[in-house]
Image (cartoon, rainbow, N blue to C red):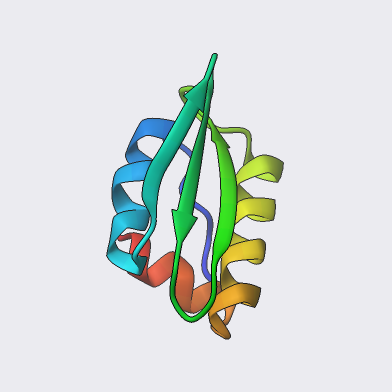
Length: 80
């Protein structure tokens, strides 16, 4: 099982998720909402914190992996 990055900010994660087709749809305060249209529409909210808490990052990655039919390790590899 791959280790989650410990120093990833919400801003960096937002940029890296563009590789999977996510784009910023809105920002409210310190939270950014990203939307992906493939394979179906999916929304994920990312706090613009630096660094992200490990539990928060793990939950976001698990949600994205489930939506795209990937393993958690595959999503982490895409973020590198």
